[in-house]
Amino acid sequence: MLQIKDIRKQYHTGDLVQQALDGVSLEFRDNEFVAILGPSGSGKTTLLNIIGGLDRYDTGDLIINGVSTKKYKDRDWDAYRNHSIGFVFQSYNLITHQSILANVELALTLSGVPRSERRERATKMLDKVGLGNQIHKKPNQLSGGQMQRVAIARALVNDPDILLADEPTGALDTQTGIQVMELLKEVAEDRLVIMVTHNPELAEQYATRIIRVKDGRLLSDSRPLTEAERAQCAAEV
Ligand code: ADP
Ligand code: MG
Image 1 (cartoon, protein in one colour):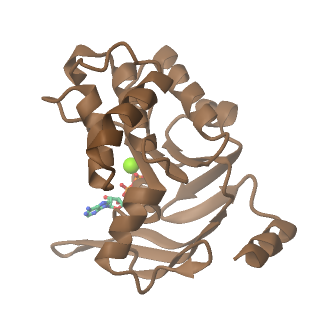
Image 2 (cartoon, rainbow, N blue to C red):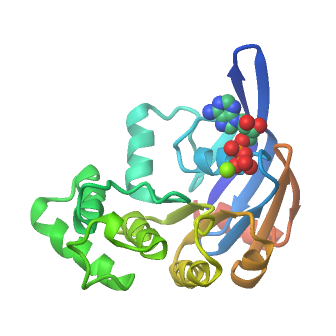
């Protein structure tokens, strides 16, 4: 189980102090599709980045399978990011001058998978997202929806427990957005998916749980863990 406890995070820019997160606590099931909704500037990206180990909390704790990250060193964060987390961004973040196969293979290189395995695993994953016949194309030869599917393949190729997606359909038209949501829904069948979105309709339609945030705080949670679930998680650790 993934757990965050009373997380606070400030950003300092010159004299300005911005309280991005102001005491957020949440527990996530190993397998659910969570949508995080909230106005711009409410702390959604900060929350996702902290959960994914891309950014650090000031105070509070992120607890991974019962283990606090308070004493994590850089190499622990690296291992967590490389092996447990997949990340999908609104702007895809693909390397434009390399083939989509090379883009997906790179994720495997970073996590230390031997060369001999990389090509096969990357090809299989691109096949799974419906791009098996385009692996030698470069990102600029694809549509937005296809680029996002490459990004999802890249995020999944290391078989992470958790997929984090920050407004993954934000740059897509409605129909393409729906295709990406269908894919994420499938991904969420056997792992934890946490998705930030601006779009309440997509959240209602696809997510199994909706969390609303505002001004760095939790406003509502449609499906918090029950006492029984909490007890079970504690027993498993
Ligand atoms: P959201 O994703 O909900 O739009 P963010 O998490 O990006 O919100 O931002 C929350 C608040 O923290 C905003 O006020 C934003 O301006 C501020 N913030 C986010 N990242 C930074 C940063 N790197 N430096 C300074 N301020 C930041
Ligand atoms: Mg954001």
